[in-house]
Image: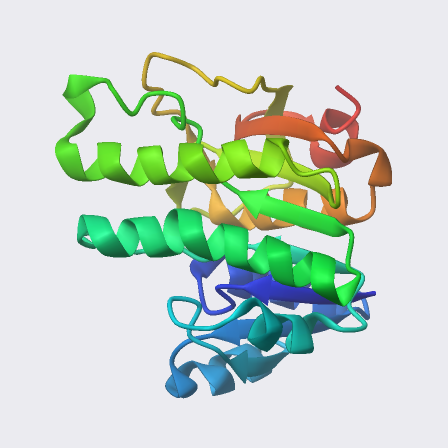
Length: 223
């Protein structure tokens, strides 16, 4: 398969690139910073420099031509102002989805957040709430899309702990939890779940919440 990852230099994306490259898939990471290209190549992929905050759908579609799937794993980053959160965590998702449809790529995986339904909870802080509202708006666009075979993955609090290939994976709903959850999950395991989802067309049209657990990933996907 050929997989294009938006946000190719992210911590989950680099892990996913290594996993996919090791099993023989071709991976292309979309990055904004030319200085990140070599990191992706060291992980086994290739890279294209596109700033998703300013690109057009046609710009992105040119990179997606011939791909079997697109993974959206880009983000605004900690401490980003509200305007950038909207551009990266909502508008860029819409942009990449539009580009995928133009390029004829149906499979679309989106990395969201376990707390996407908690944007109005005053306990989480204003910055996080803005991020979650952008993520929620992106998800609403995904759910209304008939032109893509989408899957939404909502990870818990991400850690750099070494993954062990076991998780707790539950089927989510459109709303998401109303009370913030702070269950942790290793980025290694999130990347492994994404790789497994790419092999499972039967997971299209579904939402999954993933946190650390004891169930092997392939078995967990049978929920």
